[in-house]
Length: 204
Image (cartoon, rainbow, N blue to C red):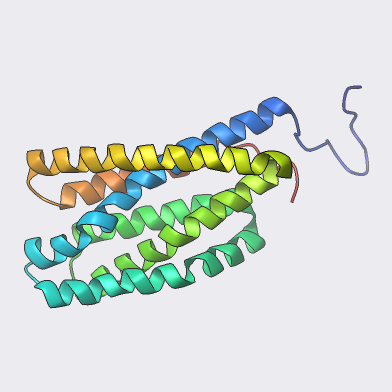
């Protein structure tokens, strides 16, 4: 029977299989974009600070510790954001914040900027997985969630491998780490734009 419009409740929320499939596809694309966005900080940040900026090994270790401390609180902070604004808005906000933090170190190299960038990316490295899981749970039946998440995890690994190869190639071409941070920020921006196209959740 076709869905009917209720005067008191308004139109029914979308719950079709095609809508769920579209949402999962967009989440998968964004998840792959996040894998690309992680690579410069995850692999090259310490060497960027130590060698390219000339700060030395000790300073790069101190800056990198901000990333580590950020990862500790990431899942708790992103879960709080999810509860406040919902999965779609939380993911878009997280992607925008991560893109800004990644791009920051390509333009500003003061100690405050480096620490802030490392901390924010750390928070959103550990917290992004929690956000994606909760966003999927809004849209996918519990019986299917493990299977879908397993496939997305495999996709993330493949995207990370491709991104690492591309980053190494880009560094050999441009000879500077700043280009890697800008490319990663662009990938995260694409992820945010893709998530903006995602249909609303069928349940909260």
